[in-house]
Amino acid sequence: MLINHPLLGLRDASEFVYLGDASLIDRPDAAADNAAEAFHDYLHLRDNPAGVHRELWYHEQGDRSWLIVTRNTLTHEITDVELARDAALRRPRTAGDAGQ
Amino acid sequence: MRYSALKVIKEGLTGNRGWRPAWRDPEPRTHYDVIIVGGGGHGLATAHYLASVHGITNVAVLEKGWIGSGNIGRNTTIVRSNYLLPGNEPFYELSMKLWENLEQDLNYNAMMSQRGIVNLYHSDAQRDAYARRGNAMLLAGADAQLLDEAGIRELCPFLDYDNARFPIKGGLLQPRAGTARHDAVAWGYARGADSRGVDIIQNCEVTGFTIDNGVCTGVDSTRGRISADKVAVCVAGSSGRVMEMAGMRLPIESHVLQAFVSEGLKPIIPGVVTFGAGHFYISQSDKGGLVFGGDIDGYNSYAQRGNLPTVEDVCEGGMAIMPMIGRARMLRMWGGIMDMSMDGSPFIDKTSVPGLYFNGGWCYGGFKATPASGWCYAHLIATGQPHETAAAYRLDRFMSGAVIDERGAGAQPNLH
Image (cartoon, rainbow over all chains, first blue to last red):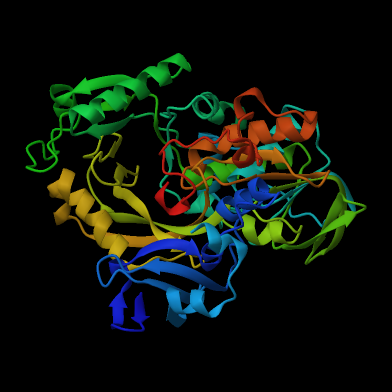
């Protein structure tokens, strides 16, 4: 698999480390009443879709940026790549961000 | 007796026209006591033990494809019970004991071959870890021997003992471990279940669950609606997809694991050998092919095929411990989809929906567990209580904290 890095162009997937579903960016609010349940779900439960999947890859053997890769889990076809920080800055801040 | 040497000779002389299918091809009925979703090894074993141990024979096994088309026909056939943790080891030792009696129970040749598995160690720390593991195995009634370098040299003289980076210092041997013919296991269980009245319905995909007032009362399938008192899902690899239809999210990601086989060679590898410094395991099939594999690719996949960096990594691992295989040619490679759970251990449990049961999360160790998985799942379905050896395989263990993490890698499925 080749990942089209927004800054570096096409890079081999073996340069990257895979973390998982891109929803891991959205940490729950640690001060909420249901924090234990929310963190259980956040840490352990996955949608695990067969098809389009947004996921986090870390360019460890390169510029050490985090990417959000949109990839089809049935075909391994990659349709979109963006810097995770761009996606994170674009979304509204949540209570979970406060603890970071 | 359906199969005998005399029958083989007679059929050979008369054009092999007298053989009959090993199981029926029935139309689905409208109601069953138990529906098992998924006709893989675990589903068929569950059906067999429901019928033979618990006397529940009004059972259907619904299989989307055909019997043997999933991971039961795609694995590397290794059978072992060399686990460490108390939540795991008694379960896998139960499986080992069932394997040892499987052919007699099914009257089917599963080519069970107990030639042993040896896990190599390369350092003092690794020796200590394997000594501890071996003691845990002995405490659970399994067999284990810690071998030094001379012991391994006697067993496997062909290894690269003086490798500068990972010298081989010894290994943990489980003599009762070995390999079994994977698709014969599926066929044997299918025949065993069918002969006791279980309906094995192939080409029947479950498209939804019937849930009335919060209770599961059956399934919708490509061959119509079928009602049941209990619905038992057993579809490791596709667990996420199937349980989504019941509105559940699971502590599971689906990943691809590749396997490889070389051209047929004369007997050279005595049992199963695993590399302690990388991830590589190898055995030799009765046909002569070297069967080997290593890590999962490491990203979510349902594609049943992997990528080349993992192929390279597996082959490097093989070359590091037995450079002689560099002369063999790879004949075939393929991939299978694994339910990778958050702690590397499986689930055999009820779900939050009464009447709906779940078995999955086998990571890349499902084949060896086939008999005990069926045994314990049948026990749970028939009695409503978890079997004592599978009591730790609960879906709520991440909430309770009672995780079973052999690797100690945490909630990161691609590291288990």
